[in-house]
Image (cartoon, rainbow, N blue to C red):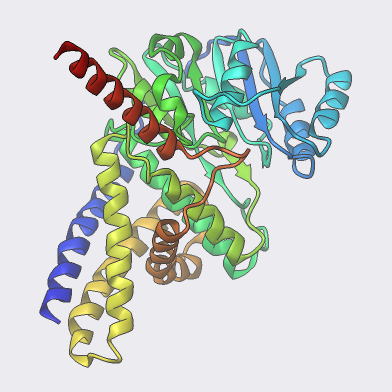
Amino acid sequence: MAVLLILLYTLILPYLALIAAIVRGMFLPPNRSPSRATPSVSVIVPAHNEAENLSPLLNSLATQDYPGALEFVVVDDRSHDGTGEIVREMERRDPRFRCVRVQWPNRRLSPKVNAIEVGIRTTRGELIFTTDADCEVPVGWVSGMVSHFEPDVAMVAGCVESSRPHQPHGWMGNFEAVDWFSLMLTMRSMLRFGWPYASTANNQAYRRRAFEAIGGFGSFGRAPSGDEDLLTQRLGRLEGFRVAIADDPATRVLTRSERSLGSLLRQRRRWVSRYHHPMHYHPGFLAGLTLLGLQSVALTLALLAIPFVPALAPWVLSLWAVKLALELFGMNLGLAQLGRHDLTGLPVLLWAALHPPFIATVSVWSLIRPGDWRSSAPGYRRRYLRRRLRELRRKVLAALDLS
């Protein structure tokens, strides 16, 4: 029992400090002087078999109120369900839209990153925007994101939500919505502290010249998250530049909510599986993710053990109560700041209570059966290890030749 309690407290106390830092970030003022410039914008949407989801996104893009030069490029990543036909129909109605097709996979890049790079090569906008095919954007999305591009901003990370205010979505919809905002509030606080560790590819924008200055996607483009977290970390290290956050409602992208608890777990398992490939990631970012997973597993096991070891109860429940109190305070505060009062109170309590077993389940499941990324992505870790083995073999043969 003592060993379990020591492990539990060792994991949860640093996690509580991390939550306290996130809450502290909520009180930091945004570093922003709105820009009035209207640079040219290219919006790139990678799509693989998205015929069922694509139309709402295309219709929302068509309503953008941005006064500058604007183009929309949907990259059809070898779809076979009519995705391309839907885009070409929109292309005939609105000349700002174009359909580009990926013919072959790229061994240097993961499939989604490759689709985005294809889109970047076929566009000329000063600012590159990306979103996903199963999303919808508000009418002022492009204008709002552009207004955050002060001269020293290389990238703007936008927020994502899985529901709009006051839409009926049941307990699971509330849980998913609050979980999305927990990620967005964490990202916002980190960026306010000047820690550009994370972003989400379905709502982000970056300067083309900054992207070119880091050499494009480069070696980190092999990773499934090469178009978001890793890209953010690289752009955030550019001298003289920073990554900004856009959290106002006019810039929030609506993503399609998952239809069941099983599909939500599978989605999150796929997300967690990306971080099994630790190459290129910032150590602090990986440490935070590891801490989240380990403390969730430890707390879940401790709670399950209480009926069998009642002496654990006061130690475990008191620690869980402190954790719940801090999470409830932080999430309710953050949601109120973002104007999502409909999710405060009971939905946050539900999320905070279910979050440890949810994260524990996803973390363990991702280790037992890692989720593959979409578009038939080959195993990034296997390719990386094979490349390292080839390099080692060449070095050994070269050493033998010299001897």
